[in-house]
Image (cartoon, rainbow, N blue to C red; front, side):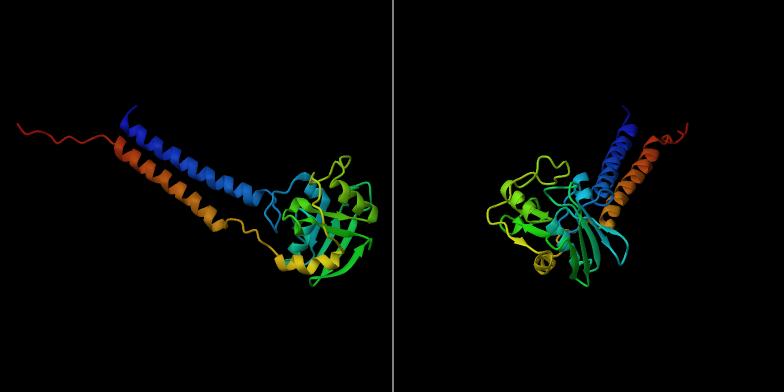
Length: 220
C-alpha cells in the first residue's frame, strides 16, 4: 500500500474512533434515561414502578428507587408521584404522592411507607415502597416478590431496614440530594470536534502526499 494512502487511512480510523466515542457518550448519558439522583440506568421495570412529574416544567423526573425518588425533590420541589407497591406491583392500587415546596401535601393511601434499607447497607437495591402493613411484612421477610414481573431489585433487605412515612423520609433524603453529574455537552462536543479536526488534517495530508511531485527541468 502506498504511503500516500496509509497515512490518511490512519487519520480516518483515529477520527472515526474519536467521533464514535463522543456518540457513545451522548447515547449513554443523554439519549438513555438515567436516575437523576444516582445515575443508574433506568430499566423498563423502573420506568413502570415510579412516574415522577415536575409540575413546574411538566417534565418527567427519572428515578430508580423510592430513595432516589425523594432525593430528587431537592431539585424538583413540586412533583406528583405515582408509585407501584414493591410487593404487589400492578395487583394493588398505585400510591399517589403530592409534594409542594419540598413538603409532602398528601400520600394516598396514608398507610404507604418507605423501606429505607439503604440506611443500613448503602445501595438503591435496598429501598422499597409499600402500600400497607401486609406488604411491609412481606418485603421485610422476603425482599421481593417472584410473582411480581415488575419487581426492580431482586434481593433480600438488610436486617434492621427502617420503615418510615414518606413525610418522615423526605427531609433526610432531600439533604442527600443529587449526586449524579453527567459529562457536560461541551465536553462531549469537544471530543467530537477533535475527531473532525483529525479527519480534516488527514484529508489535507492526503492531498499533499498524493500530489504529483514537480521535477525541475534539467538544462542541457
